Amino acid sequence: MTQPKHTHPLGYVQHTAKQLKDYWFLILLAVWQWDHLTTTWRVVAVLAVVTWLLIWPLLKWLTLTYQLTATAIVVNSGIFVRHHRHIPYSRLQTVQRKQWFYLRPFHLETLQIETASHQDGEPEVQLPAVPLNRQRPRRQPITTSVPCSSAT
Image (tube, rainbow, N blue to C red; front, side):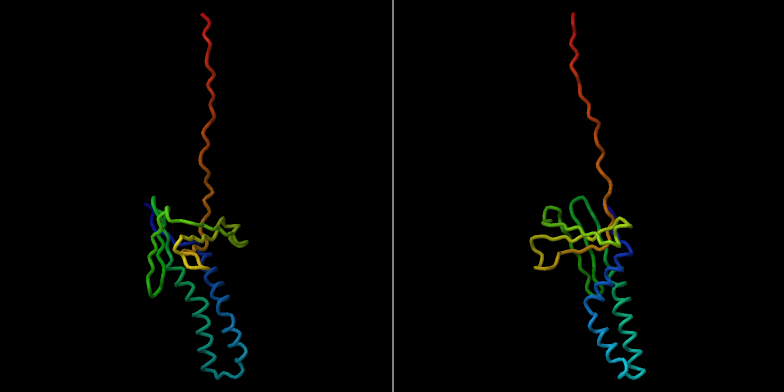
């Protein structure tokens, strides 16, 4: 049995990019209203943006661990509410592998794991920045045996 592992630190970059993609309109709203804010509200806005875009994804990355056992994939996640997902290999329905351009030099990929019970539009588990398994099984040498004819 393997030990629980964190994803690669570039997983933090992916969590941050997702936060930025999901909440870009709040940043745009804060920039648009910047001239109308008092100094106190400007400080609050900057602290909120820094917390939401940098610290929250860091906490998400730090709490996400995965473990590959002989029979299942075990994923633990969550900051306030801990989620423990135990997915036996027999229940796996789809495993999607995505390799973004910034993950390629590091031999990393994003895994999306789906089972029959997943919600529409979302995978049951998403693991950003997981190392590729580049090891190939050893090839057995091909041996052919030629029967010897014994002439007596």
